[in-house]
Amino acid sequence: MLNKIKSAVKATFPAPEVQAHCDGPCGVYDPASARIAAEAALSMTKKILALETPAPGNKEAMVAYHNTLSRYVAIKEEQAHIAKEELLVLWTDYFKPQHLEAYPDLHDTFWKAAKLCSATKVGVSLEDATALMDAIENIHNIFWATKNRDVTYYTAS
Amino acid sequence: MNKNLKTGGLREFVLWLVRRRQRFRVSGNSMQPLLQPGEEVLINPAAYLYTAPQPGDIVVVIHPYQPGLRMIKRLTAIGDGHRYFVEGDNPAESTDSRSFGPVGLEHIVGQVTSRF
Image (tube, rainbow over all chains, first blue to last red):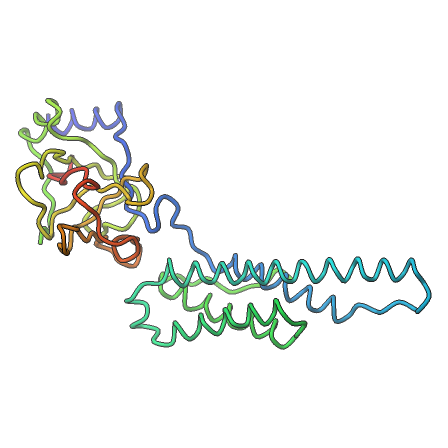
């Protein structure tokens, strides 16, 4: 009888929520956001390296070249920085001390990945940008392993 | 530690009717396996007027930096100056005093007394 009344109460008057989430109301973490930004930075690095310099004396081509180069550089810097921020959020907010027990080199992994974000941002290095992608793939594998989920790593490009 | 949480009987129901208990619905996984998402609990808002919170108590707390956010956690330890450490039972899926630090009594909304 009491249970029937309770069921009716639950159905009729929803109770306010209390959160048992991670990190407040959202709790949504995914290394994919870092991967997308790092992939954009890698793409810009490739485009900068492939950009042909215009013939001397061709003002129009020179303007177009500088404009394109500036845009590639701006996007590379922006996306590399976003990748770093996304990694830092995972590192400091998602990962907990017990994860460190399972992955003792976790701090080193994130520190090196963050350093690669900086290197990709500052320089035009295919090597660094590719190494960053590899580091994020490694973090992807660790992250989903801690959630006991088998999520296949992929890239957009 | 309170590893079980009983479903409240008639007494708890009557206390709820006369507003000595508040109902809340759990959202999220951080109190698993004790509480599943969607389960309802009753809390006693007056539980700590005369007695101090004890480690092991399940409490509803306000996030110290997000005043609109109510969370359900377990009180795990009492620090200096009556600051209370609260943690989820499922640490892999909980953000709690390990990230936002201990909370004060003013952040504790009440003690969970039973399942509704």
